[in-house]
Image (cartoon, rainbow, N blue to C red):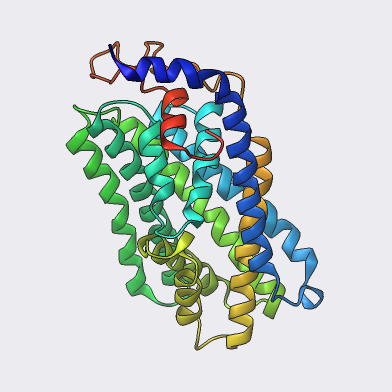
Length: 315
């Protein structure tokens, strides 16, 4: 007699409370990071009229990142996938920098290759989009060599062709997610320009935008720091060191980080809240239950069981 079914039966009544508890812990972690990011900024010297639209641009970027995951995982914009991404993304603040994608790897459902390809594709699409828009902005600022970063957009396309026959990642999903990523990081670059202008005035906005996109990509690659903390800010300051005062760069980097956390918290409290159907079986985009179609998927791979065994906040 298998132990797993009986164990699941015993813990099932506690799952709703566990989902709420994890959600509360996720919110607490985001708030703590926001306090750390904001405590050394002289907020009174900033141009608040620029920070308000910067916050909206940051929120648009964040929700579009969640939508990119949904497009890859479900083939459409799904509230369930948006919420899953928002809740698991909080884990990037933990040391190691791998816990957010690892959580999604456990929760997304599908075969091992399907799960791995979906999670990897999300990161590759975001990385490629950030490098592409950052490279274009740097080239437009008078540094044409950076335009070569646009070639990064070929990586997710080639990857989709390699795994399309064995995973959910067909070319349509990857193309839509890539376009979504380009729009998302355009919003991020707009936010970075507004924040830098709020700190030091309007000065070389295209250069600032390019540095923001490239430094975000650097933070994603440096997985040993939580959420790229430190690595992203250092790269940003290094790319702009000859054009801005060090103090202004440091202040802008911290303010942008604080706005990012504020937007994340707002979206987590709205889109990321656990829903009543969090424990229902995951569905294929065309209506078939996962595991019933062409691709083999493990029974019981729904979010309800995985959320318990993986112990992620707010599953």
